[in-house]
Length: 123
Image (cartoon, rainbow, N blue to C red; front, side):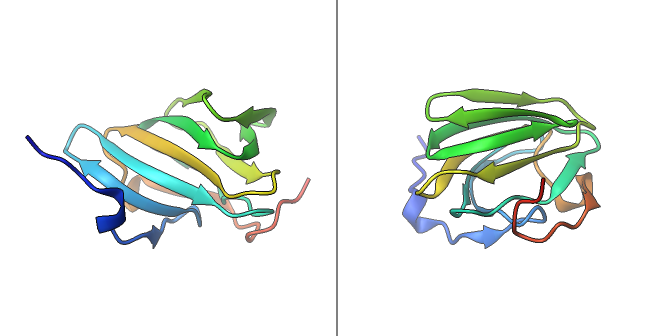
């Protein structure tokens, strides 16, 4: 049995500018915890082959997929098909924390930045 302790994993900054801790990785999938700080937005991007699911653990945000925007908060899941441009903006007063499940496993090479908007949300 393999038990993974979140605190034992050093966080890093992903290509989309979110802070992540990769909890598990295989060739077929990966699971990471992502954090977007108050007022911050991930870079608008897509994945060439990976399908993603975001599961919101805490905080509030505005999820955008292909121009469609919806408010998200704890205990909600968002499905992001491959090649769908997306980003998430923290609209709350606390860090936005979510699990990110990718199938195939996340890779920077599979991630394409559409435009660099910096870390601040722009309408």
